[in-house]
Image (tube, rainbow, N blue to C red; front, side, top):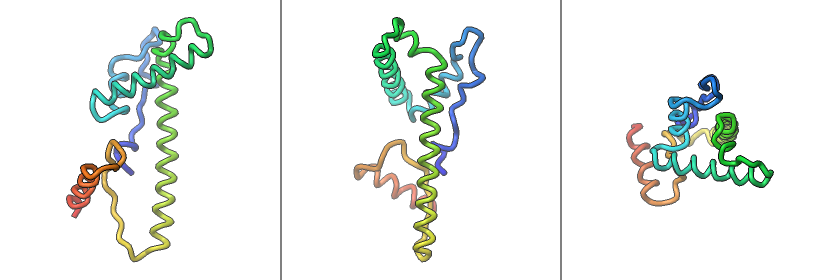
Amino acid sequence: MSTQYSSAVSLAGSNVSDGSVNAAAFERFLCWLGPDPESAGRKYELIRGRLIMMFRARRCVFAEDLADTSAVLEVEALRRHANLMRLIETETRMMERFASARPGIAQTQVQSLPTDVTDLVALRRVGTLLADKD
């Protein structure tokens, strides 16, 4: 299982008395969203923008304030984590089926990349990771 997907973001229990998320919990959430501050910030702003649109569609008066509450962020983090866990289970079952149907083919696992492998640069990175395993 990749290290990217194996650790969950824990915002639960990190709330201060006024219901807001403390700085350490928010930093863990941003690290979970992306491999670097810029991409994590873009993902956060995308999530926040979608939440604001949803709250406005439901005619909430303070949509921006609601999008910044810790409960909404925690729900989104848990939803994403659940989706990732389902993906891992599906991929694990697929790998097990492949291995049982083709026992003569060697298999190995490498750390997942933060993005899909859609170009030559990313494919070379996978090749490097595979070569480093030997």
